[in-house]
Image 1 (cartoon, one colour):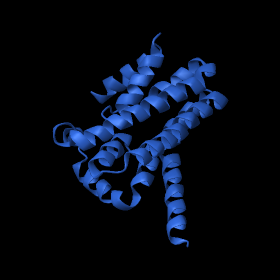
Image 2 (tube, one colour):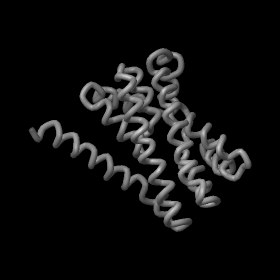
Image 3 (tube, one colour):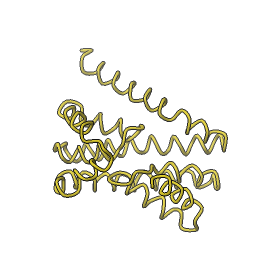
Length: 193
């Protein structure tokens, strides 16, 4: 089933209304949808490099709007909507551990999830559920999503089709390194004084 959704998402990137599809996928991925917008962003930039920055902006803004929805689900609809979403992904235990870190690391977790391979929808739902302050949540989401989507668009813009395989192959490793850098930075700021 996920493969069919993935294939349809890629097909949507070639549609004449692909920008609207990109916005829809970016919005939905931040709260419920399993396929990341990068799946559409990469072929759209390959097809028209001049649209790279506009498409990265669409991804960023729509994703942050979707993050606000995920946050609202965490606050208002956890039992009826949020918990079933986490259960659908079989992530109940991971979600419990994830939310236990929020008191100390909330905004940093959102930033790391917005940039990396960590499921952003889990961070948006957890942010609402744990009562993370909304404005810092939105700012971290905006910064993290912009870093991610503009980086992907820039790589494709400057390196073309060959970078697609590099992104597919090393995205998790690069994300892990970036998250490690964020953790190191926070630890130095927190404990280095």
